[in-house]
Length: 428
Image (cartoon, rainbow, N blue to C red):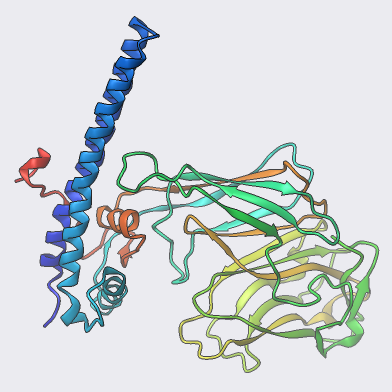
């Protein structure tokens, strides 16, 4: 029989309510503890025994409240396990049930209230030697905002220099990672080192050797190498109009997988005021151009490109409908015959790499013309409104995201989380 979402989320809503109250009480106790300690220090800075007593009492009370949240999660697991038959799940484990529940909610057009996610803000340290950057995206593999993202500032700290042959290495650290049962500020902790760039899936994207691994599909006379005004390295790609050739196209096959977030970046420069009405498109598609929407890194008239080097980028995943992983990267300049003879576009550092996921945010480290050196660092700040009670509960304790609605037209109301048992001091 069909799932009664009102019944299901009415049950879970009580556990959401209780867990929220327990976090609030923990925070209140912690605040009282700090005030007690301050008072005691004021009276006697040497009374370590009394301070230790306060600490022991606080830890004991907090642990008791955490156990209440654990009980809520156990009951939630039991409620979800009851869906096994309806969802035709191979097991009643929550790891099995939740993805199937997500799919069923999608089929039934059921949603919860969304958490609003703030786009990541990237801030490079003023004293950095390297002029590369960090790109960050809040979009997940389902091509929607990842509502599990938390309020946090993550620091990428360069631990070893980069040069022409060695990538820079960064340590990555967010807020301290405490138990999700605790009232403390959520954090992603620290992760192992990550390199810049974090591996490119395209060959000869530095254009040191043109065409190199690229296939010249059309317009060979327009495709050249520039060794004077490159962005990085010893050379870059130069596209130069001859006033007669309409199209210049380079292509290269590459292999990508579904359910992975990728980042594609390229540096572009309008060398000498390209005019006319041509179009430059740097994109990923299949040879038969079967993607409903090609993955575009840049698609515009090149006269919109600045006369200084500019970075263009896109985070993307392959559509779920893809059955093959073979794709093609294209650099395509069309209507170039309408451009004045000798006008030039420069391209450098085309990188396609798998994004680095940390704290449910997708990151890509992009090198600059000046290499990163040890002690350079870049901060990335993310934000979450936490306004969706169900969404926050499942994100915090299950690291899972439910289908949601961001304009308050959800079918499963957060009001179902307001009915707490009397033990919480609220509701019935």
